[in-house]
Image (cartoon, protein in one colour):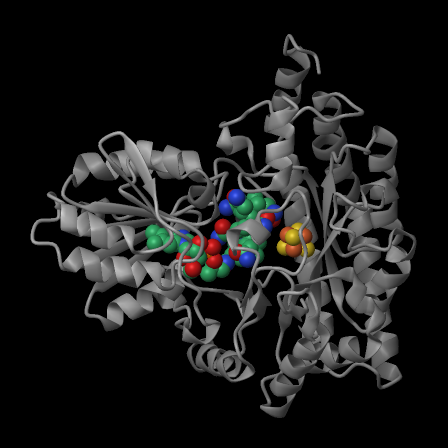
Amino acid sequence: MLIVGIEPKAPGLHMFTQVYTPRAGLPRLLPRAQELGHQCVIFCEELRQSQLDWTLVSKADLILVSSTTSTAPRAYQLVAKAKRLNPRATILGGGPHFTFECQEALESGIDFVFRHWADSSFFEWLEWYQSLEDTQVISGDDLRRLSEIGGLAFMTGNQVHKTAMPRQVDPDSWATPDFRLVTGYKPRTLTMITSEGCDHKCEFCSEWTMHGGKYRVRSAERVLADLVFYRRIYGRIPIFFGDDNLAADQKDSTGQVTVSGVDRLTQLCQMIIDHGLQGSYSGQVRLALADHPGVLALMSRAGFNRACIGYESINPDNAQATGNKLEFARMGEQTAMFHKHGIAVHAMWIMGFDPDTLATIAETVKAAINWRIETNQFMVLVPIPGSPLRKRLEREGRIIHSAGWDKYDGHHVVFYPKLMKSWELQAAVMLRAMPKVYNLGQTLGIYLSSNFRTLVRWINRRAPHPGIEFQSHTITLVLRVVGRNMVRRVGKPARDYFEELRRSPTNR
Ligand code: B12
Ligand code: SF4
């Protein structure tokens, strides 16, 4: 069969437009389908070189669409066009958005939704599909066999069927994602996933629900094999570990820690060093990792030069909303620990929690500047499907755009905040916070101070990879220039949206 995968593009410009990487879902599922003899190709619309080839779509047997919330409207447009051009094809959908909005997806033309993880369900479904005598006519027995496959949603007539949760899958059985399947993609950084799920439960996040409350890890041996695979194909390409938290604890059913996340990260770094795979690495970790200087030093030796950290907020009243994972009084000191070990910080902030005010937002921006954080992502709180926050705001009647998914990109206020107006929040984040950090003075200051820090570390023989560190500062410089450019380009749409909110009759 010809299988065409599609990752639809985002509705507008966003923080990552110019440093985009495809998600690892389709590249992880399709190598195995290829082994089974299918011809597979993926298009990632956000990448200029990976535009959809409609001739191929019109010949495809299966069309696989992978979407997040903000890309869902575009996904539905593509599905409608694909259905027109190729009514014979079966269309499958997966990813975080369709998992939680499966009825909407099915009503928009997707034939089968794969909820949660699809590493077993996709192949069980494939076997089922190939066993059909006629894919257009599904008999009672076919339906019974289909219902036994976990993690699916499909329709018969007007009725939506959801099967049980997908089978648990050992992460060691995941195929190594093969990004060569993404047409035209010439990666400058590769996303690698070594675990799934998270040991926290922040109210605004859906990762806990997405992974059925489980945290699963791939073994060190398999991670090593993945690294070696990528090294062979791409040479010393920078790797971004996209795990929700690279140092999350593994716990048993009673909540007792069975394997400490810090130990796992230590093992990963040691393995990189022992196998001579040092290079340029980045990953998502928590700020509390700063309290393990030994691990930071080892990360630095392995070549980790950037940590993406959920800073969320400096407002202590947000402790519960942020999963009780932050020590608000120590955030500056913890940031300095990362810097001390030559690790640049990409801080992911969220603004608009219930206790937030315009004053706390201004304080947050000040802290980000004072702590000399290399890159900052100020996002508006988004009630994404699958998150407890969405359920609460729905109950409280506080959602503005309940299905205007194109606005769910962290750049638009889509709910009524508690202590300010929606348009005030929109202006505070998009028209003030972002321009304030992404200006030339800040950028130059950070560039000079971080180079100076590395120089001192180098002279004192404390920088294991000065070359990688200096290079990482240049990358920060480029990212900040790109960020500034992006802030300017989103200025007009952000202002228009601010006006739309301000003029709305509810004036909330
Ligand atoms: C790498 C990454 C990025 C990269 C690349 C994003 C991209 N290409 O879309 C960058 C940094 C650019 C990015 C940006 C953003 N991201 Co992001 N990102 C991730 C991250 C960390 C890893 C993605 C990944 O590769 N996962 C691993 C693969 C294997 O998982 P998967 O995609 O879910 O696929 C599995 C199943 O879902 C299923 N599946 C998926 N698709 C399909 C399709 C079919 C047909 C089938 C059968 C199965 C299937 O099979 C796979 C194997 O089980 C995830 C968190 C996470 N752990 O997933 C967040 C995540 C996807 N991002 C998220 C968000 C919100 C964003 C941003 C809007 C803002 C932000 N918070 O940073 C921006 C904007 C992106 C945009 N397109 O508009 C959310 C999405 C939530 C939602 N409901 O939309 C996530 C889940 C993080 C979170 N918890 O908030 N992101
Ligand atoms: S925001 Fe991060 S720490 Fe919190 S639940 Fe989601 S993935 Fe885990």
